Length: 260
Picture (tube, rainbow, N blue to C red):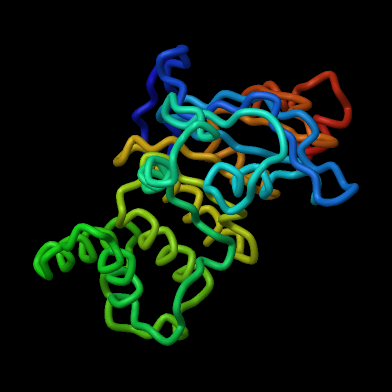
């Protein structure tokens, strides 16, 4: 495939077997009698932005919480960076999960801290100690990446919704993850700010060569950020393709997601 380098365009990548970063094989997850992930088999490739769509309750957020380790699945295999997670020891699993960044809907920020302190927090929690000079450099770089340099000493509680999303992303990126998981990154934002966040996701993909999974109900976000789109229905991957392919699908139900 052609790699796109224009501003505000997602990079397309070669999807070969060698470049698989995440693979799910017949993944299943239930909560009591309610089956959420019925049978998910999916490959995610290095450097791509994968958007996952679906109605509320179809398992989108459950799926990425399994990847990051917030939930355990019931059956099936999850392979991260070529290693079957089920076969790993606790310390091996911890090392793999250090490579995964999760941007929560809320940003998971500490309102009682300044912007600077929110970014320093994950760095100071690492087992390998980082000197203050390195921390300062990484905080500065993270804020420059998301356009928040001027807000470094503001209290988090004073930030707008869009600024909080940017700070949440900066705090996730400061640990330099290889996989980024975005859970509804534009929820609650106005159209202009939503577009800015979508464009920021693309910039992150380009600069850090991240592999990203983007859970969203925002079709404009899906269009801007996604190299590939998956639609979940009743706990399975019901349809897959580019935005244009999905928009022009012969399946009326799939096409209904893209009529906006």
